Amino acid sequence: MSSLPITDAFASYLTDERHFSPYTARCYGADLRQFVEYLCDDTGIGVDQNAEREAFKRREAAGARNGNPVAGSIGPKTITEIICAADADTIRPFLAHLAEENYSAATMARKIATLRSFYKWAERRGLSDVNPMTLIRTPRQSKRLPKAITVEQVERLLAAPGDADVLGRRDRAMLETLYSTGVRVSELVGLNYIDLDAAGEALRIRGKGKKERLVPLGTHALTAIKRYIEMVDADPKFREAWVGDKRSISPLFVNKHGSRLSSRSVRRKLDKYLREAGLDPTISPHTLRHSFATHLLDNGADLRSVQELLGHQSLSTTQVYTHLSSQRLQDAYDNAHPRAEAS
Image (cartoon, rainbow, N blue to C red; front, side):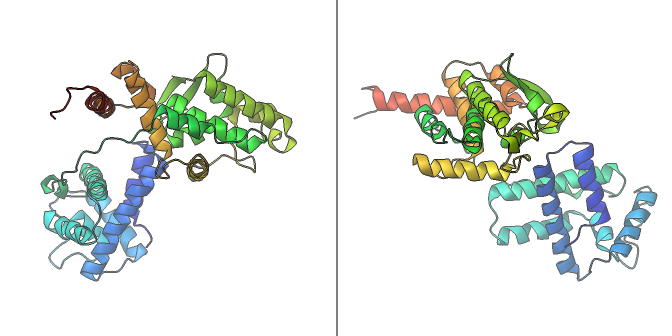
């Protein structure tokens, strides 16, 4: 189903003003389209793009200053009008429908978060009279600790890529960088050649909300990147994309065509090396980020430093890793101390 002018305007707000990542913006867009589809099925009102566009223009012009001008005495005629006039009784059946579809608690929470953000925006813009989400509670989720792997498992994974060609060296450099810096996979593929500060042994990262941070690059990762760059420079097919002025804006990690690598490609490459190393296939690029943080804390790093390295806005987001580190210590104590448990 095509989107509505009102949902397109919200999507522009997320990317242009809130600086949401493309992935998060797509998820929110998909959630809103699902809400629109439900309203169409529930009311029997189809989407006429011209009518929806006119309804959005009227609502923008009228705002919410004069009560509820969109519904009127004869009832709403468009899905846009229904959305703008929605109350908690409109939202609850939709959430009940989602529950019947057996969505997980985490997915339900995200869909509710989408509607919260949407109606907060709509109310502020004067498109909606009230925010119906103020009466909707988010279901409680069980707290799950982030998954981390051991240093030995990391070593096995990092040793898996070959060293004989450009793509093998690229894969080794990517995996080394993920573990050395703890960057998100979206941040990894967004790196440009100019973001590498080889002399300073650091990378400039553009994170969520377009915020930049400088992260140190470990010796092993830096060596792997340099070896990858050396082979790119020696290969005419790849070198062409990096010569002259192009180099400053070229992606650091390229695919076989010399273009920027995608997040999905990184996941596929990781899956390949997990199989070769005989490791858990559920390990993801984000697992390396979790492992980076956990191993730092295990070895005495302070929480504030880890927060800055990860690019977390809130310290509470980083604190979950202290629970993971503490659990590992508790497990080690229980397994090793002769009087840790009652006989």
